Image (tube, rainbow, N blue to C red):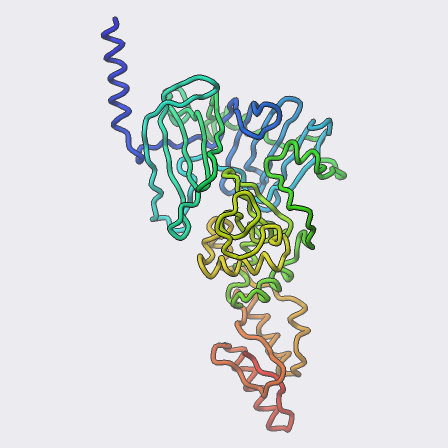
Length: 436
């Protein structure tokens, strides 16, 4: 009998040794489990139900229910800019909400998505012992990472075991992540159960992610700071400083971008990026699972770009993280990010590349109230509005103190402006502006 058990153990050890990183499982996108999460209410133990949708809609939202002692939380994301976190029964509050600026965490191996579909994420494998819910067990460890400018940015480890009776043949045991130099952050799972998409059981499971009626009141209040501090893992206090912020218009964002030095050809794309990063909200923050924080209009990360956050290291923008709650200062830093890494620095662009590449720059009233450049200037602005609507904004602007000249890179509208000025000059009314 002992010899049979020994042979069985040898067989499974040998089978595991044949695995490589390329054999990593695909985790179910719908599951329920008991969890232990550091920082969660009470002792961190809860029961969670999860439905991840990469491109969520109101008919199929990306959502997660977290049930703790005397408190429930629903993260509900119908798209990547209208999400909310609902807290029910927390501190005796029936229901309150706070904004959810991005999609929820994606529990997948791997969860790094490059804009180039041919670029592969390397996953490593080993079989090790872990402690889960106080019990020591053997598990498959799958690990991968993400780098920025050849600097290690974030690492992930997922611990699983094969399971013949489980969806996708896998059971998730632990999920661990960290940024370089920071402690590992781990979530433990027990009684993990996946659900098949489009099955009767899966469809029934998905129905549980509807917003409760008590949270649909027209006068629903935003959660107080006390509730956020106690129950929201995404809440951040930015010292004692207050900046003018909140949700901005497209024209506001375009103005910040131009002031920061962004080329006119990038304005539409950057406005689109801000839409998906912060919902055009200068006061937005997002707490990442590695402990770092994304700040403001363009969700600038604390680890690389600013100082004063516990996770700050490089401060490449030479400014404090708290100052990034200022709309213009945040955009100034975003310009440095753009010059070093391009649009792909933002997940908002990677996930919405097609839309953002063709997103038109907003046509704003202030542009029509610019320099007093007469009939030719008005004609130039009208021409630019037409091209901008078609997704081709003008790269040049009217400047007072000129003589009717147009820069060589100012396109058809610039050429038309110069021709108009030649005609008026012949009649004795020279233009006093240039297009540059």
